[in-house]
Length: 433
Image (tube, rainbow, N blue to C red):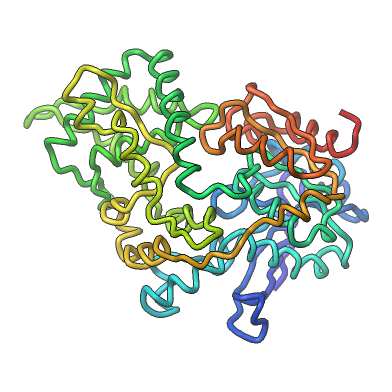
């Protein structure tokens, strides 16, 4: 059923599609996709080119905008926009602890989830494009993991693209997950050092929280078991433009005095569980390392294994000395499937995905070297989530790609910079920047 409705300045239409779970088996199982069409109210009856937006993640549905904020306002000046919930997210056959048992036990669930990477998302886009544009190519805007999908799009179906714009999402074409995380931990350490330089009082606050967690069992209101390692993972905030400030505000309300002594404040626990729980996006935890799988080597909990090469991140060792506690960043660890009630039922499924050894390739270097699609990419100078050196190496291999390297924004530049960022990137695809 298609529904059209209005918000301030825009007309929205709900779009629903049916696509194969496995595009190589079109007669097999199918899944449902959802996307929200957005057009400026004053242009609702005009013929406009299309822009499809691919969200970051993996595992997040498309933004739920109200009106035309951030980059959307700029896009609506010339495009009709399709905000796609990528398969497994939002309203697109969501994959979580409640729905995955419909497909069987852990082995069947893991097999099902092998179809939720960039290659399948791109084929979804090509399957629905004729229904949306009448067959005309569209412009793709890829944020973070959406950029990974965009490079896969350029590798497999460039004929579907009028232009490609990537914001913080140029992946390495061949790095194993181990290489990704070996590059990531030093970046995270720099972000933590910058945070403590800005807020030196947080050094003692973070040590105090970690020390409390090492000596006490703390279960958050939603059932999440807060450990020192889980507390450290709040460092994922430091990759965003306001993340350091958000972490500071969180730490300053950590403790409260009670008749039984000092305890972690209810307000702190409430905020922490919202930041750490994967209930709203479990697919992120399940396939996060799988997005790097392209050969016969398993990912095998790469972030956890590689972390052992960086002992400065060990909380107990940090507290045994007088150094600062280091937070961690965008990484998935097996213990998360023990402490998070949204992930516990999926632990065996996650183990099977981590052990998988037959991931197909996601990118085609030869086709990228012959690329004819106008492409522009924002590369954030010290991006905590996507290694800038990896991105620039890839940029040199994609024919015609133009980069905008900047330290004005963090990884969320498309949100924080809004119309200005998208305007710059679109101009780069048109040789008028």
